[in-house]
Image 1 (cartoon, rainbow, N blue to C red):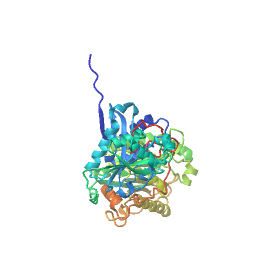
Image 2: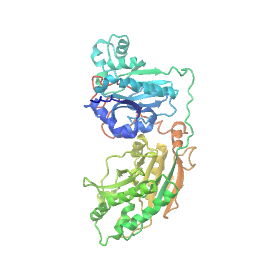
Image 3: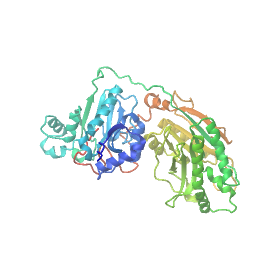
Image 4: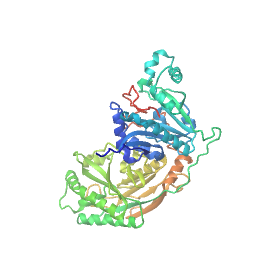
Length: 535
């Protein structure tokens, strides 16, 4: 009789593919608490890949610790969880921060005997030592406070009594046992944490290998993370059949691949050329039905090209009837690893809503690629700042904007807004539009475009914020090399630091009801301590 192999526990860095497992872990640990969104966990991982750890037992995630780097002036001052965590996305991460801040710590209670919490804290401590940070800081829950509230004058006295052993608080006790010391109480840290009264212990571990009197001098290295971007300014033209349309698209994919581009993007509604070989005059709804028939073949062809030419393809957008019967304007992103992703247009224009009955989508999220997370905003969506900010909070450093505009006024709306998105989010924005005309096809009578690749406006980038742009209204391919590391530098040390300087204490965007803090939500928090809690 063979012996069963012992279970294998591994603590490693979290990767985007771990997001479902992390969400499943939190659901198991807190079944009655609303979970993070997938985008928040993706943001934590993408914004600081070195700082997120998972504990994996026989292939199942049983522990998760999220953290970011924060400047001492922020980390040791009074704060709340939403402010310091960038509303749960980890987007407050500062690449020059001198403290490691604990955003989340959760452990599967069924595996408590494996000392998973200690292992995760040890991984954080090793990271802080390797990066030569001053230490680790977080707000730790005080779930025993509610029971002891009538016996103490306030949370400060409760915390002091716990340290002296007069009260037992499993969470605080665990953290003290792991080398953390409270330096005070954070008020309104988690307002909905009723067990802790909304308070948290301000916990600190100081790195013994760093001189506390030595001023920190962290700088972001001027590395090179080169990416080659290609944008197609496509001529709207009649075609005889589907095969001719595919041939026209493949030509540009081939050329972009010959130039060793990492991405090539096509315009919004570029597939409307497929309506040019219809024999009958189609009503808007009949046109949508025809385009829906082309959806699967188009996606299959774009995916084939991405694999064959080893290039990531942002497939403009395609109006189609989706599985739930609604009509959507959808960008299909076909990656060179064979995966296919989609992004619905969130805001249809008044014209699209009236004539085509197009409805807006309900979510915008990053797409993970071999180059890192990217985002797609279809035309009008680029004129709504909240969407780009959501993508950047999730870690996007490149946003693709397929567009279709009929005159210069419409084009300039998209262009100016896209440039603003690049500046306020310190990211690259790539525009791709149609030119020419397509008689007999609604929405394609005339086109105006000047496709471009836009940058923030700061020293590492082009003086005018334009990496490259096409000539107006001609069919062409525009290519530029960009350096993603320049964005990291600009966000940490640039002349202006739009992301870091946001007033998280004054405003935020609530996408849906969700978790508001370490092991908590706006609706309810566990009154016990199923994990170490706190940072």
